[in-house]
Length: 232
Image (tube, rainbow, N blue to C red; front, top):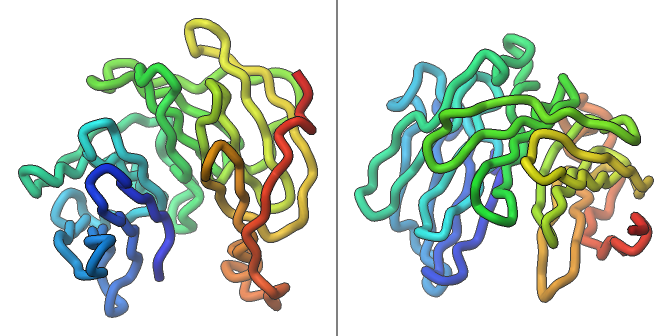
């Protein structure tokens, strides 16, 4: 099962989170975008017992930071040394045991001083200082109630989180300890989003219905979200 995916356009690489490969372990694969050939593989079980992968983000050097939905870890995968390690762990990362409702989407802040991580079941956004992970805290959120956050995208300094039937904008304060949330309703079945040529696109993947073994509402879609709907 393939979940989080990111493109490293500078290095022409595609990073993919793969769960339960051959019904067993969880891995991160890296592919060459030109040829489609696999070039690297990281076994997350070698980094932590039961290591898993939900989503990932890339830093300026092409290093990947990977969220684990079952275990309280963010992993660091270095494509130059081809090694992986636990980048951060904290009691705040702990989700509901056995149901993969812990860490989810992940994004850098615009200034690169921190990672923002979605914690699904708790409806939280966590700030992890970068590059040392020395400070980890939950953001103090105000405004609208944040729906269950799945994929995250940073755009023009704001953090956008995707939920099943909504997209939320969190506008961070100056020291990135708090954020004002504004929610806009969308069609249901959403899981994540991406940016392309300055536009914001959400993905209707029916992931919630898939997890619940409910009927899938097809077709799957990628559609543009009008960010002007959030106002100032």
